[in-house]
Length: 459
Image (tube, rainbow, N blue to C red; front, side, top):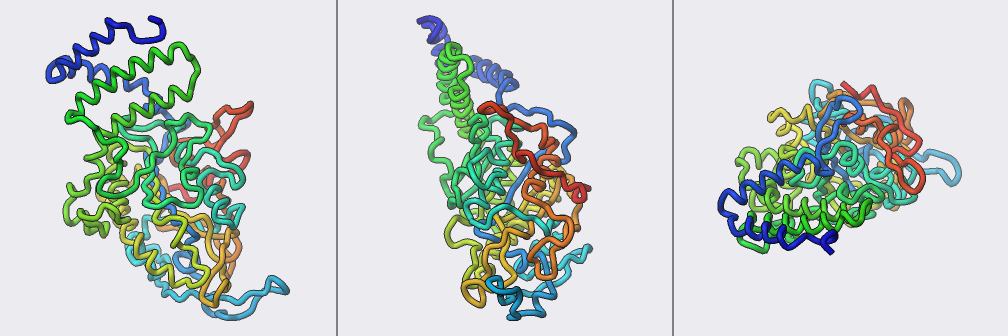
């Protein structure tokens, strides 16, 4: 019995420390806990080589953002509006973009009116115009962009980065997901799958109380911490008789993270501490923590506090960028994300954080150059679409790859989703061929047996 549970004497020592919570007993106990943090399973780990970025922020525009109406300007598409192209069952009518494009920044990048604010910081952006995936269905394509697999759920890219590098602040999750609504595939987009559970993304639903499940039920967080430390001793004693029980170990780490959240998250999520000028930069309001601008501001605050990966979903699996009927739908959707994304880029730069933060923006696929359900709508298009990279180690004010005259297929330098993943890992200091995990008798990796780093985008 003594080998399986904390003995009575140790428990009394804990109670004694608890009774002196206001004095040196608490200070010493918490100092010991802090020192033990170096052995935390999420403690920072070196990559395979020096990283260009320490943090990763991902934007996912759910539903299929049209590359042809945003960042991949095609004069031929405009000139051939309503023209029939193709043969037989593949015959289609071309749909010109209803949005005006103009050159922006010193790089002269043609940017749509939909992203007026992004155009103001476009010299920080690198656009990949020839990204292509393996599915034109929302669920499979969303899974592919997040996990590299369009067939079965696998660990997400955020979980792989957490597994490879740990985090710089173990009081907060290594991987945080800001999602007011669930995307296609829901939690599978940030799941750790067969990786240890503490690498799974922690979803935060933006609002006045984003983490009701980890709110402290007692008046003193210090008291709560001591109770947690007593519980950890019991759990550790329990674990000693179950050597190799990774599920139990993961749950214990999750409990630690929950206690850390109670200490640090309320301050990290409190955007009322920001100046009026900063709130305006993001198009945010201190009184509306649900806006996308507020979420982008929280992303910056999390990165400042050492969180390794943050992903933001602008909308869910309904009422999104899936403009089959009318591409005019993109106007309101872009208004929601344009200023916040540009504000985050500008804010990170002025704080000296952009060089160490990699920003990735994408959708599950693009949209067709031709009409779909109506003469004003576009269909799903996975054969060629645009993603963007900003910040850590990226060649700003540049574009990689050229799509054909209609933006339908890559004409030069195609980039598969596996290549995008390999490039992101490389910028984070990880070799995608060496970042592996042994499971069910074989080594798995994010890029499976594929992927090449797109070195042309690296500064």
